[in-house]
Amino acid sequence: MCGIVGYTGKRRAVFILLEALERLEYRGYDSSGVALLEGGQIFVDKKVGKIRELIKSLWGKELNATTGIGHTRWATHGGVCELNAHPHTDGEGRFALVHNGIIENYRELKEYLISRGVKYVSETDTEAIVHLISLNYEGDLLKAVLKVLPMLKGAYAFAVISSMEPNRIVGVRYGSPLVVGLGEGENFLASDIPALLPFTKKVIPLEDGEIADITPDGVSIYDFEGNLKVKESITVQWDLLSAEKGGFKHFMLKEIFEQPRVVADTIKGYISRDYELPFSLKDFRRIVITACGTSYHAGLIGKYWLERFVGIPVEVSYASELRYSDTPIGEGDLVIAISQSGETADTRFSALSAKEKGAVLLSIVNVMGSALSRESDYTLYTHAGPEIGVAATKTFTCQLAVLFSLAISAHPERENLINQLLKVPNLMEEVLSKAEGIKEVALNYSQRKNLLYLGRYLSYPVALEGALKLKEISYIHAEGYPAGEMKHGPIALIDQHMPVVVVAPRDRVYEKILSNIEEVLARKGIVISVGFEGDENLKKLSKDFIEIPQVAEELTPFLTVLPLQLFAYYIADYLGLDVDQPRNLAKTVTVE
Ligand code: M6R
Image (cartoon, rainbow, N blue to C red; front, side, top):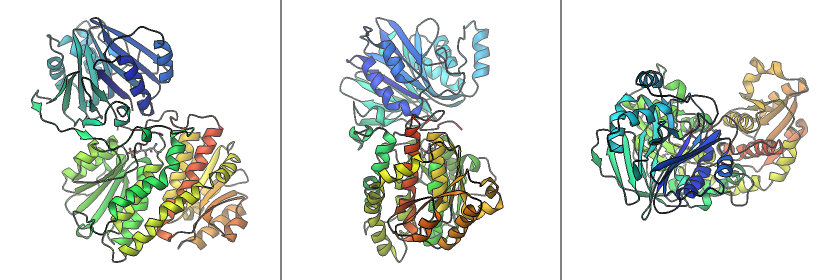
């Protein structure tokens, strides 16, 4: 979704806003803009395209303002053009506002505003908020915001400045993320922590229904009734380097290569002898996993593990489907919500509605202080560090590490299973050391229009994940399928033009998947397989064979997914695409 930032202090705001915006660009990148408070006036500049277009436009301008707000957009309401880009103003230059989220009742608000003589110039929902604040302003920005909030329906975070109140920003969170950064004689606002890392590690993640009133000398937090709240700040553990490319061409590539380390870090937290869950999984009659995208694929793998090692039934639902389904859910159920960001609207709202019905809510989250982590009864963190590439990679394997540790937590064979798990990071290193070979294979398929990905058992979700990686960053159509289902339909697609990626480690379904490969070959399909080193069967049957080291059957997803991430990466990079910021996508999806 969009990214918003704010700064007030002693430094030149424009530089801080641009640096913070660049670090938020993964949240949206179709246009960007800043509004700066200078000499009792608001200067606004906005440009279509990446933030570098905005930087070019601002280059050489004498901008000394020390307070301002900025925005990078992922369009929801209104096309991609300068008029619709943020910040939006009230037309008289008295207020400027940036917004992330959706104002669902903006049409009624717009009609009302027009009836009051307001000139509404954009196609956005956002513009309504700034006009409402302007109409309700009586000398105090916070009071005007408090008057407007009851009129807004939807999920949003916004930041507003006024030309009449220098050195003040008011930020509001209701359903979309907003974090306050605390400095010395300066304070910040941002949608996400990575934007703040160059400036401060002391942050206050706002909760829904909170307002931050920010000046260089202090931050006050209020609820929507205007009551002052006492909030503790937290110190973020992520360092600045973890949010930089560190010599890699793309964040995605860096994040793929970070996996052995961050998986080891994540495992560490959950395998000590004394680690005990605050509840017993066996006490639940059922587990329901809710998640989206890559996190959903991790959930599918978690299901196999939980059913195998805990022995209770597990359902995995797309969060967007669970939310509006009639699935009976309530007391006796454990809901596990998996989310890198902890802000995904579908995941949060499906989990919250289950919690309201009496289920216990456990979340697996990467971002400390995120909404989902606060809303859950229990949270298990992945220790992946910030993930900037829009395509999830390292957070997927870290989610697997948490899910596996959770599943085996009370198993009689736990010690033995932990010993197996501890070998995983080194084995992941081994796979990654063969990246050049995987690149060679990948480039043979860069001109294809369609690929099929097949797997069975634990490799089925890996196939889904491989297909998702390819389509989201290379725009090549890719379909993941359970290999056994192929004969029930997708087999009709196979001919000499169809590459089929088969994930086939030697596990309990190995013989079965070999038969599925034969079925592909019988129809002249081209097989690219991922399997254990030295597997002569696979080698013979495949046009390209990618080897991974042998590992215990249960742990294969940690290794099999790596070549598929690299396969997608190398194709997208070869095609010259924007790997870290693929078209139409946003890192954190805070709308339903
Ligand atoms: O932050 P979340 O894990 O809740 O995000 C869920 C999906 O939006 C995310 O996994 C998305 O599918 C990624 N682009 C996949 O690479």
